[in-house]
Image 1: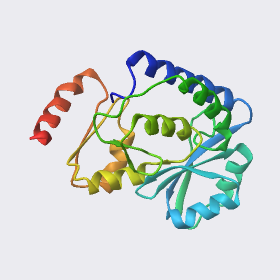
Image 2 (image 1 turned 135 degrees about the vertical axis):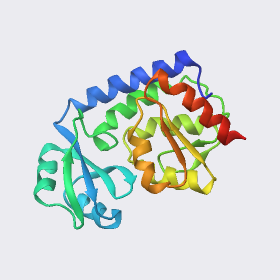
Image 3 (image 1 turned 90 degrees about the horizontal axis):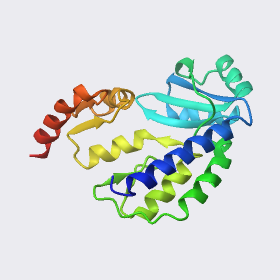
Length: 209
């Protein structure tokens, strides 16, 4: 919030989407959610198959990404402790090296921008770190396209900083669902439609006091 003006931010989002779609069209790739299992066991198993743990969501959920052949091999050879491998309806292997061309395109688009520093604490899903400068935020947003998302580390940071409420901006639901297990004492609200705005305002007022 407050890093770029709305027009520049939307332009960057458009470039990101187009570049990722173009990169995804190069090779038949995809993603699959692994339910259960420990990251310490899952990660080396995925590496053996040539897959990337593209999303580490916490609560025993990792999303693997790679080629169609690699994902087929995963379905036949699950890591120890994983109950199910669920294919995701996505266009490609996002947050992996398959998106490297999109990083280059996004970096070119971001080169002329001069972002302000965040007005609020900005927690990066690269590693859960709090980022203080607009330049570093922008660099991380560019690189994030081809690097794993560590939502698990973001939740650890929220807990360490004493967060008492979490509001997920629409189309919400996934992240608040993941947080139920990792942040049991934190109030949660998924902002799915305008009808949820009043509840969100009330939650912010309650936990800002």
